[in-house]
Each structure stands twice: as C-alpha cells, then as structure tokens.
Length: 166
Image (cartoon, rainbow, N blue to C red):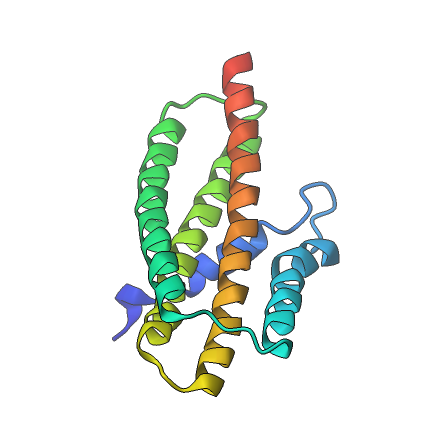
C-alpha cells in the first residue's frame, strides 16, 4: 500500500556510502560524525533549555524548503552528467562515485522534507516543554543535513575535478 512512498532504500543506500571503499567496512568515525555529532549538539541544546522560537522556525522552514528544491535540481543534474558515458578512472569507480552522490542527494532531500514536520510544529506550539524537545530534534536534523551536504560538496568537487582533468 505504501510502496510508492517507501524511503527505506534511500536511507539504506545513503548509509552504505559511509563504508570505506578500500576496506569495504563501516567506519565508526563516519557514523559518529554524521549521527553522534548532531546528537551531541541537540543534547546540549536540550540540556541548556534552549528552544527555537516561531519566527526562527519560520526562517529555517523557508531555507530548508528552498534547499530541498535546489537539491532536486542537483539530482537531475547528476543524472544528466552520469549519462555522458564518460569514465573518470574505471567504469566501476565512476558508477560508484555517481551512485554515492545520487544516494546522498536523495537522502538530503528526504532529511529536508522530514525536518519540515518539527519546524511546522514549532511554528504553532505554545507549550514550552514540547518546544524544547522539538527544538532539539530540529537541531539534530539540521546539523545532520549540513554534514551530509558537506559530504555531497566534497564528492561533487571530486567528480568535477576528475571531469576537468579529462
């Protein structure tokens, strides 16, 4: 029934990109960076009773919505570039690079869309304790998204550097 909106493969494919290409093993440091760091920051945010007010939530909502739209465009661009049938090193390495970037961008779009739920909640909530918990969730999602975007930037930089060399 929900097969049309099942995003498990997007999440699984993204986390598969955190595996070392050389050793084919999961790197604890990557998982700590992409999950642990946002948990620490959101924990600090919660511990110090900080919360995102409705006007800040509105601004973040706008920014995340625009970002999601730009990421959709980037996804189309990556698909267009991948169809050139150009290999950077080997066909297999080129395929891996494009699939990892594609997976990371798809996952970033998903996180952007999911982060809208607590952001909209923050825009309408008046309960202080609820706002504190939801603010911590927003901080986790936004930091997680920013770290994932940095990884995408690095991978696209690698792709373009290889493109310009050839």
